[in-house]
Every structure is written in C-alpha cells, then in structure tokens.
Length: 478
Image 1 (tube, one colour):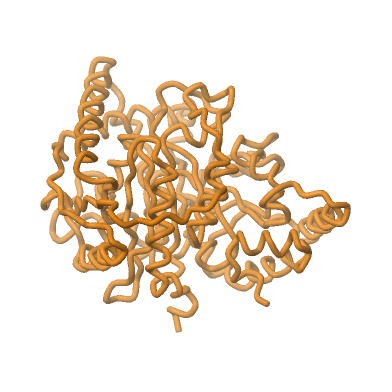
Image 2 (cartoon, one colour):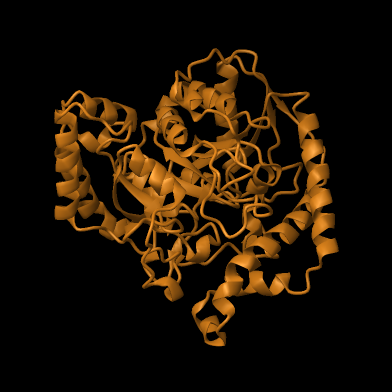
C-alpha cells in the first residue's frame, strides 16, 4: 500500500484503526520528500527526520493507550512560511527574516497541532507573500508539479506543489489576491478561500481594517479540504470580527443533490480581462460537467464596473501591504534586501489620505451590493482561476497577456480579486488541461457565509471530474 497516495481522510482512518502506524506514515512521507523535494523545492526549513520519527512513535503510543488527538493524529504537515511555528524559522521569504525563529505557534498552527498533526517544516512562499509566483532569495523558486521549468503560482505555491506531488496529505495556505486559488489551479488540486472571518488570523497587528487576507485549506479532494477547514475555522477572542459559527458543520457528509443549482458564468467580464488562448475553453469543459449534473449555466453581465473595482482594490491593497512593509524600512539599509515589487507597493501608498481610503471603501461597498444582485439570478458565480497558463519560472511576472500590457506586477491576476474584495467563499476546482498539458482551475464563488454550500457543490463536481483528478504530476510528466 502506498500511503502517500491516499486521501487524508482515508489515511486518518488507517491510522486510527491502526492498520498503518504513525511511524510508517512518517517514513513514507519522508522518503517521498527526499525523492522529489530537491527538484521542486516545495518544502523548506525541514526538521530532523529522527526527531519527526520520535514524534510519530509518541503518537503511536497515544493510540495504543486509546488516545487520539483528532482527525490529523500523526499526519505530516508543513505550515506556510508566513505563519509562525514555535522553534522553526518564519522567513516570509525575506533575507531580512532569514534568522528569525518563532517562539510560539500562530493560531492556525496551534489548531492543527491540537488536532494531532506533526509539523515537518514549512511550505515555500514568495517574499512577504507578494505575487502569484513562488520565488525568493532565501530558498529559491518552487517549481510547478506538472513541469518544473514553470511557475507553481503563489503565494501558496509550496503548499500546492507539495500536495500535488504527495509530499503532504493536506496543506494550509493563505489568500490575499488568489494565493490559495491560483496555485491550486496550476497544480490540479483544490484551494478554498473561506468567507472573511471564517478562519481568524492571530496574532495580528491589526484586527479591524486588515480584512482582505485569510488563511484556509488545500487538498487533493473536497472532503479533505472541508475536514481541514473544520479544524482551522471557529471564533477566537483575538479576532473580534471572526464568524461565530460551529466549524463542526464542515466535518459532515458533503453529498447533496446539485440538480437545479444555477451557475452564473462571468468568463472574462466581456473582454475586460485578457485571457491566454485555451483558458476559457478548458473552463467551458468544466461548466459542461455542471450541466451534466443538472446545474444550468448562464453567462452573466458583470453588473459592476470592473475598472472601478480595480481602482478601489488598488487603494485597499496599497494601504494594507504598505503597512506590512513599513517596519522593514525603518533602517534605510534594508531597502537593498527587499524585492522591488514590495518597495513599489510601499511607495504607491505614500501620500494616500484617509478620505481616499474611505472613498475606496465606499466603492467596495457598492461593488458588494452589485455582486449580491447577481445572486438573484444564480446560486454560484464562476470565473477562471487565472488569466495565463503557468509561465517560465525564471520570469518574475507576465508583462503582457495577448498583447495587452500589464500596468502593475499583479494585474495579470485581476480575475481573483472579486471574491476577496467581497469577502465571499470561493473554491478553485481543477477544470482540466490545456493543449500544452498544463492544468487550469475554475473558481466557484458562493453567497455570503455560504462556505458549506460551496463545498457541497465542489463535492458534486469532484465526482463528475474524476478523469481530470486522476491525472497526477509524475504520470503527466511521463
């Protein structure tokens, strides 16, 4: 039995029935990491194997006494290198943070540890998590699971590749501008951005305004994504805007008859979003799977001004990202060690006034109300998870799409901002493969706090898309 090929829920069952020991599971994953990680560079700051095996033995001893810590008991896990794990580096991909060792766990890590996982290391991320391409000067570039010459996406690129290559059973990530969804789509796995506040972030320097980014789960199947969400989600005193609903709802049966659920297809927003050839075609194939399930698909007018939304988004992003970068610029000498895209973000925010920010917030509110009106005509909204196919890993970012120049380093990922800006739940599901053999994802956006409904629809889709999901990276490479 190849333990690393099993979905996480099946692995959890084997561990708890003691058909596979935690030591055997750890050995299998360590062997897989040793074989593939040097080429793909998904996991970083890896811990000593003997220490990990000792922790696995301790988990086995617990089970022998009839004790289980939870669903993740004995599962190897790597935390994205933006979040703290006690005793491990939190570099955020920055040379300035290379030697920082966290003294305590962040909330996400503490919840997963409490559920029994064994942290083997961290997953790679771009510097400060900025940009949908996972490279940095500390650890280097993470390679796409289906072609190591290409980008893995980001900023949860390390997590997505580790999942696709079976280096981890499930993975955590975070999403500010598609960072759970873009790499999931480019590596043929599932990435779920929860409703804003579903998974609280703590500790955080700001708990009131910084409401664009969120942590969340990734998996090779929807059931695993939902089970991990059940562990990550739930209110916390340090996060006053967190959703106070019982996260146990995500641990149940996701099977639901999808017939009659209406999908609103937004596509390229009537030409506003440039798309590389083949992306809309592959997403069209995914939409036909929904139609085979009895879900009518209708092409919708956006109902909002995409350019107005983009301009409001820029103000919010500049304000929040600049606040993240500012502490590193206290010493002028640090500028030489910060990537130019991060410096550009900081400089763009200088001179931003409170009235400008409030005007952008009002525009964001208008957009939210306009998006809600679309749900009068459909139950879910659908968009591609990216506007380009995975690109050369040596390239920093796509400067143009189909001859249209990108006016910022992140505009090529404009397609992901809508769920983020509205705080709505959104999952990237594997849509299929293009003519070049590379994967693409499809975003499914749900109603406010409709996380469970999104997961249920994705579960139905998964059962109809087995042909796509059975294509694994190593098999594809052959």
